Length: 299
Image 1 (cartoon, rainbow, N blue to C red):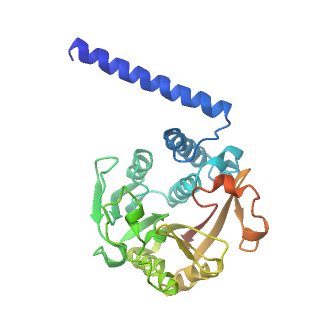
Image 2: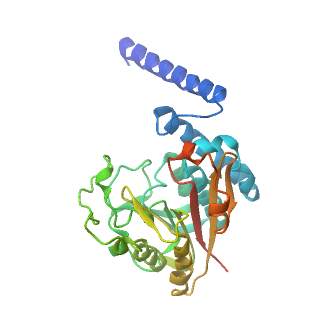
Image 3: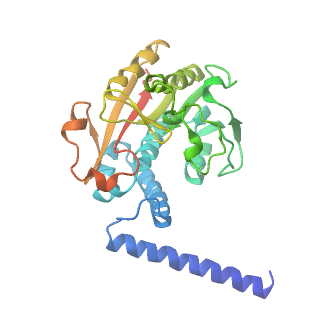
């Protein structure tokens, strides 16, 4: 490397290091309060996800305590979803085939863990995207509802915050290459409900009879689901549909509701979603304040 290029590389690396250290100082002083979806937000959330996952993997049974931290109120549901998914996957042990639908697990941190645990890794997304890591990874650019992957072929499937986008209008997302909207303003609101069900059914077809399926979706306080900016938020009366659909494949599922408050994330119930709603909820209007975690039970 010539001296000028070496100097420029050193300068760029040093400035980046100083910048990140400054963000650390801001987080410490502000107790991690940050403008949603700002550059510091994305960087800090990434750091918190890694730290939370590592702590969870060290002590799997302490997960509920680990996510109950006051500064987590300033970050979205990914903190819960990543750490919960990695906890459940770790308990599964080393296995053969893994599939992630929606590519949320397409990060250097998660893929490094998955490549150690699974022999064959697949990612599926409606829109193609670059892989965070190269190696034993197959990418499928398909709609989960009509994909050509073989039934009963995966030991573990994750679908993190993805089903709420199935059938939705992705034009609001500037980063999406999907220009066609399946929902129009003229369509009957009742026709928009339940579009996640065919996708969940497809996941149940792909998972092996003794495999582990992990799904997360945002959940509202309304009885029926609603669409907001191309994203579907489950209604509380729809939660039973997970059990009904799973029963068609002779499977049982466990549902866990997690809610964000000023003290962080904690487990809640259907009855408490409304009664314990935080009066300061508007301060955390980004992301979902309630998320449902769905897992198939393994005998």
